[in-house]
Each structure stands twice: as structure tokens, then as C-alpha cells.
Image 1: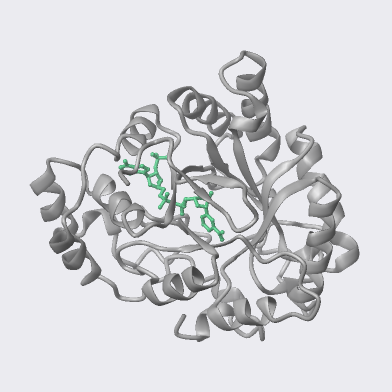
Image 2: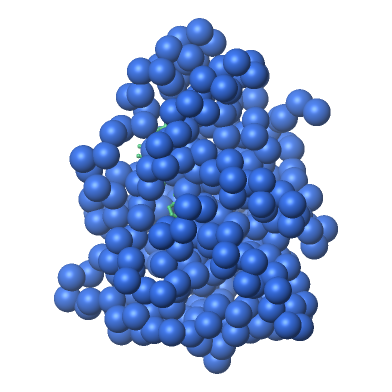
Length: 324
Ligand code: NDP
């Protein structure tokens, strides 16, 4: 079936996730009001899936943008699919609901459509929530994500979230969660970095076999925020093979990078705060890459993580020591 801007993927719990979503992370030097305006513009254009997180520090503004578009009649609450993320310092079971309620209060929403564990590892609360804050070094914690999960299941039962999932989990970690004794709800998704340099084909195959939807971030080669990304890594949108495929279709490298992931059946998040790019990114449904071009783009894979979160690499739950 042809993909359109309205295509939604049915999750294992019956909820439906729009196949294209707006990313909202921006480095702290970007005024929060810019993301707020961009979110309003995106909703007016037809975006219905908004990806955000407590740790991005902008849920107040993103929530205000969503509510303003509900208030002016552009959308109803049920049209919007909002994803929030539980930060790693809220993993102790008694803190999980508190973490969610902070997001709900910031957003001024009654519920979140999808709430996911941001990473598989836990860190100790330090007072500063910003992991790139050099004055507050990250201190590892050892909360088992299976116990966090039980508290998330309770949040779903309480009606505060419609769906629950995970992010940045590797296969072994997913297997452990799926085989947790007494598991009540499976994670509906695993949100991971995914693009032409990291196409996640093995993880996708595994997730598909377990009815877990893969959601891709950094599809355009990431935000390249120096706090998170090694700036000596190649710029994805400057790749010459990507450029030559794009030229064939008279499209931009960004459009081809997004189609490549969408055509694999993976949900795409793309961040832009520029109206022209928001429009361009929402317009990737009017062309189809051929199987040969997909094959060519598959050849670009080099297992490159733009955002490896290296500060956590000694943590026992660091996900990227495994192949996938
Ligand atoms: P993306 O790969 O979406 O790239 C964003 C960058 O690309 C921005 O600099 C943007 O600039 C630029 N851009 C957007 N559209 C175009 C275009 N058409 N042509 C050229 N450049 C373009 O980056 P992210 O890493 O931000 O990933 C997307 C989202 O995924 C995040 O915002 C966040 O919501 C989520 N995420 C989740 C993570 C997790 O751990 N679960 C980790 C990282 C991201 P401009 O705004 O100026 O257009």
C-alpha cells in the first residue's frame, strides 16, 4: 500500500502511530519559542506525530503549541500522537509516575499517547537534569529496567499514557524485557538511531518478529549538537551516493534519506524548525525509490552512531557494545 502523510502503523496494543513525526530536540542555545512556533506550523501543515522528551527542556512550549492548535480548532486532542520519554534519573519504580506527571504538568495535557524509557540504563538524580552540564557529572545507577517497566505498566493502567515503549534498547535488552516474568504489556516500539549510515536491518528484523515497531531518529544525520555528536563524523546529507540518488529523482538528499527509512516500514522522526524544511520533509510521499536504489543506499551502512552517549559506555546496560 502506498505511503501517505496520513499513514499510521497499528501498534501491538491497537493504538495507531503516524508514520512521520516531528522531532523537537534543539540545543539549549536555540530559543524555546522557535520550537513552539515550528510545532504550530507543523500541525497546520498536517503533522500529527510530535516527538519530545522531558530532558529536552521544552515540553512547556511544545505542549503550549499543541494546545493552541486544539483551541483554534485545527486539530482535536485525539488527532495528535505525542511521544514523551522517561529520563534515566526517574527509573526507580517509585519515581516513574512522578517523572510522567512532570511531563503532563509541563505539557498541560491529561495523557500522553506514547511514553518510552529514554535509554536502558539508569543514572542517579543529581538535581541537574542536563547530562551535558559539566558541573553535574553523570553518576551511574543500577535500577533494573524491568522494574521500571512494571511502574510504566501501572501508568498505562491509570490512563495517564495510551502506549508504552522503549528507546535505544539492543536485542538482548528487548529479549530480557519480553521474557520478564509477569509481563503485562509488551513495549510497542523501540525508538533508535537509524539512517543510511546505520540502517538497523538486524534490529528491525528482530523487532518485526516480536511486533515491536521501530521508530527512527537522526534520519537526516542528526542535530550535530556538539554536546552529543562528535563533529568529526561525516555529514550525512553531504554523502555523494545519496546526492546522486537524489539527483536522479530531482529531490534533495534529505528527502531520499527519509524515503529510504520510510520504505523499510520504519516510522521516521525528522526535526526541523524551518517552515520551508518542515514542508519539504512532509512532502516525501510523492516519489518511490526503486529496489535497486534501496540496495545502493543499503550499501552505505557503516554502523555509525552519531549520538553514542559515550559517557555511559562503562555502564552495564550500555546498549551499543552488542552488534545490535
Ligand atoms: P535529524 O536527523 O532529524 O536532523 C535535524 C537537523 O537536520 C537539523 O539541524 C535540521 O535543521 C536539519 N534539517 C531538517 N530538515 C532538513 C532538510 N530538509 N534539509 C536539510 N537539513 C534539514 O536530527 P535529530 O537527531 O534531532 O533527530 C530527530 C528527532 O529524534 C529529535 O529532534 C528527537 O525528537 C528525536 N531523538 C531521539 C533520541 C533518543 O535517544 N530517543 C536521540 C536523538 C533524537 P533545521 O531545524 O534548521 O531545519
